[in-house]
Image: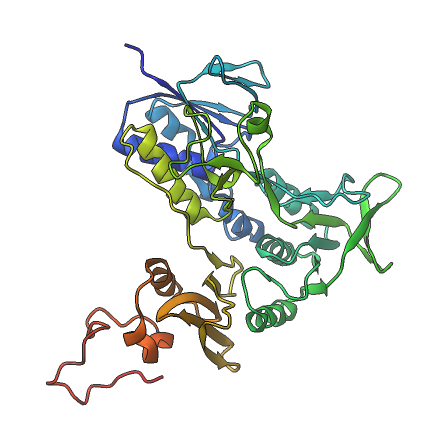
Length: 424
């Protein structure tokens, strides 16, 4: 008998991770077809920043090359965009005329950069920062030198500005807020980060709202104008003001969408034959944009595609790291805290270190680290597990004890009363 057919729309990290998980637990169950809108096999999108910085090449960040698909009997259709889903006949239609039937459909269409709807947003030299093509265009622009203006002081914006600066451009970051990474850092850590990046040559224009992007007679960007009437010259403008889930395909075929494609705890859409994972999915009202939650979703989706049916995705606790060489930044959970929380802080200006831990009801609920992020993974684990840290309170700031030391809930061995212990 013919195998059931699985079609994956979107050849990115979340969708292909779901295939990897599926092949582990149910190899050979499906005939698999993958549609990828880009001409490249699956690559590590979060490593685009090191490519822009010149620390890695495009070949270095490929996760699954073409041979991997062939080895697993997967039909890979690159450089083709799925334009229509026929749910009644269970078929997908691509822009080149390809039609692929499915018994199960996995949507992993990702997200698209948010382009500010201001005059001049479509000028030549105005780009996003989302895929390999964007990086190639930035590298080509940087080779000519000049001034780059990055709109957005979030993770992507800072990584783009740092990469362009490393390639010889003067780079300015325009941000609507008062502090950088205002969703990932508190004010103290954000100011430390700004000082570090300014020392590297980046310029920051805070609390500025872009009114228009101005072009020259040839239709190429020449400047950015703000609401206050001031202007800044620009040879390149990078839109890094956030992303939006790519839900047009799902919406056009009648799937329920809100901020993203609405899915249950099994990553199933309102159509039982169709699943969605990654940045395009909206789970319990949240659309995740970080890789760890997407991989957790992929594992659950694979469990159900494999007909095991026991996996559930309850949502994710988020953590953030900045991918700029020499800048160590980490945050997780509720790092801002509130009236019902306790905050422990450590500040060492000479060493450039700042640590903030937030405790609520005896449990670690948030962490914000700058300059020393070695214990970030441990703090994240404590936050995610919801462990009682009362016994660790006095030494929590100093990180996880080595494995050969006494467990956190035990007293030191009596035969070594004078053993050195780290003090808060």
